[in-house]
Length: 322
Image (cartoon, rainbow, N blue to C red):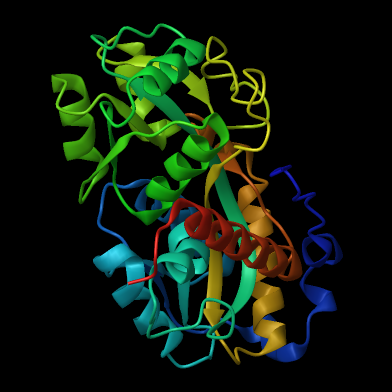
């Protein structure tokens, strides 16, 4: 499934502020709060702070990053959903808050589709599949064969529902069974992968690849459509016979439902301008993240498709919403 569906139109950016209504031309007149529904140090936090700095300069007002961590991003998303829809509270949503939570939680205090107005896609990055060096598998094919020969003897770690479902998607495609070990964060999971307490792990490129580069774990594949320029030695899952397991970890900015359309347009224009900056692109790419600006409708459509996709994966994997 093609993930690189975002062809940056940035019409508002091309037309300039003169094309926006007067209200949007005066917005913003005070600081903007950017809610990050995850802890400091993670991928979403890193992307948010890079983009917030650029938006502050572009909008002429401070964009203040505020972490509201916990429970797969649910508390932070709830705060954002219930904020005044005036453009002064926005949220850096991601694959979990805007798609996967709906597949794994029976009740959410917010609706991923109805509680927010999409503003713009921001960034995407692939996942990497790695194993402990002691695992007798130097290639993905050898890992699949090992898992098929010894069902449920390999342990795989995940830090969150999105990575659990990504691994479930691979397990379905490869027709293998491995034992799931959940973690509260990527750090502890990677530590256990290095120590051999778990044998297999999918995690975002920026988190896991440094340990592959240092040969502390063995990288087997990447989940993007094409090989990464930062890790050209890693084959894609599609190359290795799994074309339907293309997965990206992604972030997109949303605002509370009911935010004025002209304010959404102004924010979208600003985000597109920031993400077109060579300096911002370089900062993101250095961390394995690709700037992926979009129109509001493109983000809304993509998030809806992702939610439906992961609901299907969860159902096939027997993961019942709790």
